Image (cartoon, helix red, strand yellow):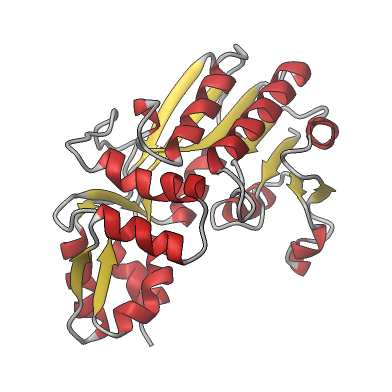
Length: 288
């Protein structure tokens, strides 16, 4: 099988790439800088230089592909995130259609089922629709809240607080990106399917920020308090950090759109539950 992997150095894509190599596949790694691939993978993968917004480059990279793992990469600083998603959606849909790719795994997000009103996730929803319109087999992985987001708060957590635009009592499906990579690799290597399939990746448990703060305190040995940042204040913080209006809307819109009684389309099940707990992740990545 010729399997193309996008964002192969990211938290999820890097795991997908290694699992495919360990399964005996020589995957195609599509990335802007092939030099970023780990040296131990040299000769085991086929690196192809391509920007995912460059239609012709992506078409060349995906020629002959049997299966495709697609992630919309982050928008460049200062760009409109939803416009960037729209370009990526057009590119991947054209590649799938023109090459008649037999199976595409798309990394989407919980909340994409709303289609509108969830900030940056609206761009993933639009990509889902573009892939659906190709008529080719596509699997949308609706992923939960990445545990790795805690890394951005490490300094604040060390000082005793965990601030968030989400209501501190709102449960989220916290998931380790490595576990998403394992689900994606299993689907890429497994039996084919027809039509459109949606599979949630919810992690092992739904937790509030208050509960996560308690786990941080337990593992780190000092008090950590979850602190809610109201939407207006959060937006002001993003503007002060130099983000443009479209970027602010994309980031702030996720918590605003998904915290008002939203319930994920897919309930937790054996299919959607993955193993890595927040407690074990903290012990591995944040304890010193």
